[in-house]
Image 1 (cartoon, helix red, strand yellow):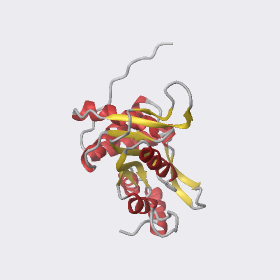
Image 2 (cartoon, rainbow, N blue to C red; image 1 turned 60 degrees about the horizontal axis):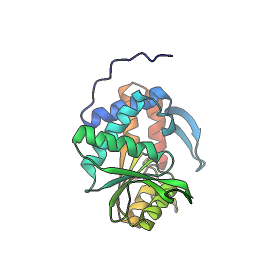
Image 3 (tube, rainbow, N blue to C red; image 1 turned 120 degrees about the horizontal axis):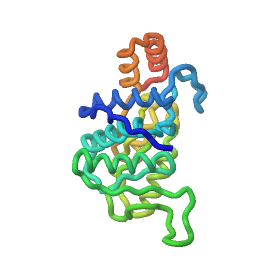
Image 4 (cartoon, rainbow, N blue to C red; image 1 turned 180 degrees about the vertical axis):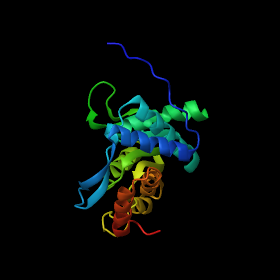
Length: 231
């Protein structure tokens, strides 16, 4: 079976263009859905995001560009991108590649194993050594923050220093451990690191407005009024 080549899409340059391309690709691929979804928290959300469905070249291209732009322009200097297993692994590899091709910035990447390997080279991480390095952790959608907190522990045990966290989507809603602050706010206070996001919930609302999807816009605003972090 042969794969027929297609013309590459226009190359988005600004962060706004990259966000637009990423949201569109997420919607087209089914990674971003609007409707009624019961979350683990029990809340009924008007949207759901499953980064695992960003599985084509057309979807991964804007993902890589948007991650690289956010990392490049909104974080302190670092040496290694760390992707928590499993979803964070392709994020780290894609962002590492895009940073080099788009900005000429060469950094390393690493990720953890779900179970430490006791043969061969052994260890609980794969990729660049973390000892003595400045590390940025990549995540998809931070709910309880469990995956990122585990990553912070792994990196510390390996002798690395986390200088930032970048999540793919910030739902911008209260939750966290006490139900008063967002998980992002709690993590920033606990770890003392900057947490940034490629996309915010408000970006999704803006995209819906641009598409004239007024019903979805109303549902998103109602949800944000009820559960959103107050600016």
